[in-house]
Length: 457
Ligand code: NDP
Image (cartoon, rainbow, N blue to C red; front, side, top):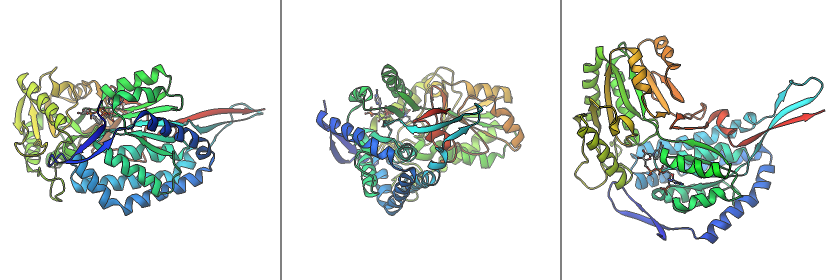
């Protein structure tokens, strides 16, 4: 087995750093420290945990330039998007620093006359967080901000290509004054995760990543009967009705598809457009896609950086090739750029037949499919024709018309005239093969608590 993880700059293909794989003794002591810390951490008044979290936001803001550069180096995210990611992490910390206590207040129940009954939200213990590389800071803070403040302790297993981010995040908590063991990180390959899930000291598990990883982690956690929250892949539909303002919506679609080089679970991957405006929309959308600048992610002018790893580029290329062989038409893009780095151009596919990868799988890169439909009913059935159910957006000049479609769409998040996005104030999660459970808002913070029912006679 490998003894180290190597990080690589995906724009230059130059190796960055190597990180030693943790041996068993290191894993053991990490879990021991986490478990030992849980009692005193969870006993503290929540106001103390809120203040510490406020401090994390300050550390993040003070180090924003440095953290953004690290994200850009490790995953190739355009630098302005990397700074926004760090900024959003500071926001989620401030958000829960202000509201965690309120969200976890006891629910007084008047259900049984003559008694005192209530529900009190108690933390579960050490939570294992298995996280991906696409938003290497945000995914972790979205987990840590609510759940550490609820009184849990966190053990991170980050993606191997973002080990530098994992270490930086561990240092951020240390710098903000968190006791050892409240937030820690394991540097282990995925074949050693099952042992950690089974370990008695781990109380619950969360994963953000592919459906394949979700299934494996859910199976292990099920065997150990541990609660899981799974935020998995998506193939979000972007439904354009015939009364939508074409130019504006085409521009929004291009940005929804290409943010983070299209490597987002809630990217608009399948564009479904009404026949009446399909030709005009397709040419406006293609123009927008072609106008985006692909290049050095450290350059402020870049819209689309490289994909994060060579294997991800290869996988996307294969998915597109197989879809074309099955009958799809390339309107623009369609093959990796021949230059150093894992660059893939903005790509538009039409005439995508059922059953091919572009119709069935998650395309994790700047590749959109455009399908035209004769009416709203067909738009809904095409939108729902996916194993996934994470986000969806509907674009129309008539918001009532858009809102009327919401109940028909199979997704955890439906946005009308807005790009699907995660926001600390709103619950976020999926259905079908996109996973289950909530993140963010008051819903998210209760996921890893025991809602204990108390009856005092
Ligand atoms: P993975 O889902 O494999 O990786 C995400 C995290 O899960 C990593 O930390 C990974 O660790 C871990 N993991 C994977 N398999 C297991 C397992 N069996 N047990 C425990 N942990 C596991 O994503 P990839 O990086 O391989 O990307 C492949 C595809 O997944 C992408 O092309 C995209 O379609 C999808 N994806 C979706 C994301 C989303 O936000 N929806 C995020 C990332 C990927 P390790 O790398 O060590 O296996």
